[in-house]
Amino acid sequence: MTPEKILFYVFATILVLSATMVITRRDPVHSALFLVLAFFTSAILWMLLEAEFLAIVLVLVYVGAVMVLFLFVVMMLDTNKAAMRAGFVKMMPVGLIVAGVMAFEMFLIVGPQYFGLDKFAMPAPHPADYSNTEELGRVLYTVYMYPVEIAAVILLVGIIAAIGLTMRKRPDNKSLDPSEQVKVTKGPDRIRVVKMASEIKQEAK
Amino acid sequence: MDLFLDILWIIVKIVAIVLPLMLCVAYYTLAERKVISYMQVRIGPNRVGPRGSLQPIADAMKLMCKEIILPKSANKTLFLIAPMLSIGPALAAWAVFPFDEGVVLADINAGLLYLLALTSIGVYGVIIAGWASNSKYAFLSAVRLGAQVVAYEIAMGFSLVVVLIASGSLNLGEIVMAQQGGWGFLNWFWLPLFPIFIIYFVSGVAETNRAPFDVAEGESEIVAGFHVEYSGMTFAVFFLAEYANMILISALTAIMFLGGWLSPFHGIPVLGALFDWIPGFIWLLLKTLVVAFLFLWFRATFPRYRYDQIMRLGWKIFIPITIVWIVVAGFAVVV
Image (cartoon, rainbow over all chains, first blue to last red):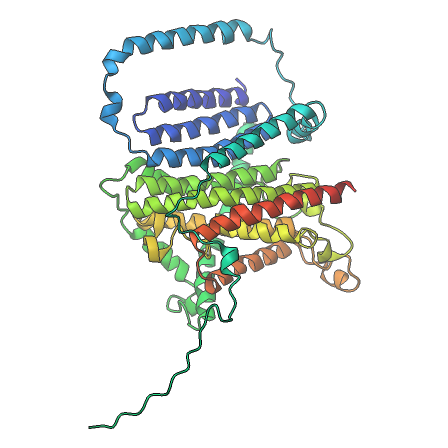
């Protein structure tokens, strides 16, 4: 076995185990953290395929940003574990049937008969100066120019829609507008000078 | 056998990077205390060793001897994993850092991306610490820092994109070489990319959770934030990670905007010839120290930002400026 093969099996095992933990752990925070581990390990598998750009971007975007926000939400949930497990036995047959059907369908579409070295040739190892980032950029901005731009516009629309849905002025919101705050002058709108007679010194009794 | 020797050689190199780094971290804490005390007209630590020079060693000894307290209702495993998750990325990031021309542990062609990815996963340590402590102060701090880091990471990423456009490479060594020219320090990226230089450094200060962006530790509001339940060595590891990150940000600022190991006078008549014999590593060290000093200067001079203004600065000011500069830099490179 070559060292790459050993590494692949080690990380593939970790990936499958952590993915299993995501769905079996009772605590949602643990599940989210195992999902982070699963992302990280799959990034390593991509790295073994010499796709370093995709691998690092997976860590950067999914582990570094998406999962942080996801973890936030999960941490703030007040999960009632007893209520979540209620009716487990009653629901189990239905769940098992659904899971079985899904597993069968997946076997039909992505079963072992579609994979193997005879279907996909082994990727040739690239020379040391090969840059996956450059190649990807070249393809994205030449061959797939329009799909990239359309995808970007769709994402932008999604962002605007999400902001539009959450933008609302709450009457109890006490936030201040800094540009209004810095506008104040030293003039009459802040200070009022009051003229008054000086106090008369009181005689000691 | 060859593989084994290769791995051994890599481990030797890692030790050669991490040991001096840890020493730098230790003395950076002393420098911080000394610099801030002189700025506040105090003397600072002066009891252990001559002029307090052995203070970091004493601190380390004290922290190592202290008991590690596990809170009763804490999630024990995650509570202990959190400090490791926070120092791991801080040290791993140094793998792609070039100390001189060609002197680098891993000369990978996506070095900049790797750094960005590692600095972005450093926040997990804090978030997990905040949650696993099962304490309200710690949790509030984790939430604060998470939102802050995600906001400033975008500005930081975009400023790195500008550097990438200007240098045409993701490799840190090539970024430094792209700044070489006939005018010495006027060729470095700080001048053509001045707003980006400022934004990168300020985002770096916010990412490392330092004053004036240290709301995650805000002593007056949430005691000490995410490490309020930590003691002894577990606390020290968080401390090490924070200072290692500060040194990393300083060194990266020096690499990307201040010409890395290049001499500031290279190419300038008389001065250039006078200073060209100094090894590049010394220049890099000097530049890093200058930027690292700024961190301390900030802490001594600026009051803490209000939280909504931190968010406003990140989302509404830095990100638009960086997006505009991506376009400007793109035009400048193409035309």
